[in-house]
Image (cartoon, rainbow, N blue to C red; front, side, top):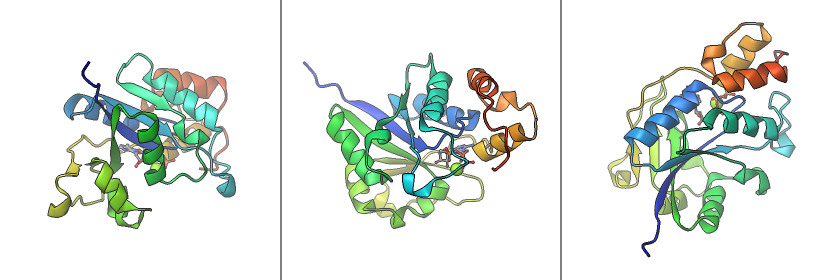
Length: 200
Ligand code: ATP
Ligand code: MG
């Protein structure tokens, strides 16, 4: 039997909460780039850097699960919850590849993160083992050196300038910004009374 070789994009974030900017970007990459699936990898709380603004890991994961329900190419992953923290991308990718040998993991990052990529832990190992898709962020130029053009691709995704920070702040101010998140996520936010206090 032929070996299945699925191309899985890895889209990491705190998703506090997941919003339509995240969802539209990942949706676009699934449909217009050569990806079979996109994994929303929820970053757990770093116990040494307790951030009061960051919601409980499980609630952030639940919101991602709820938002992606019904679209078969999306997957919500708590893979980093069981890794030593903080987990560096290179270590996460190594663990993912060991656990899911039938998949090729392709890193999805924004132009803002790409600017600092050379400062990450073991960037050369990441580049040796994985392809990277870099999407534009407003205010950041996007340059891929020729030597990396085989591994790294700039993708022209539409830009939606929405952030979770904006959503948390708006909810705390009592604004109804329901159309910035998936309706089911908005329901969870209301039901659990999330982000009522504005500490950004
Ligand atoms: P916060 O405002 O809390 O920083 P965020 O909206 O940036 O939240 P993250 O969970 O930090 O959300 O985002 C996960 C990843 O998605 C990050 O790499 C981030 O750069 C990217 N991202 C965030 N917002 C957008 C957007 N509107 N369009 C495309 N990518 C985004
Ligand atoms: Mg952010």
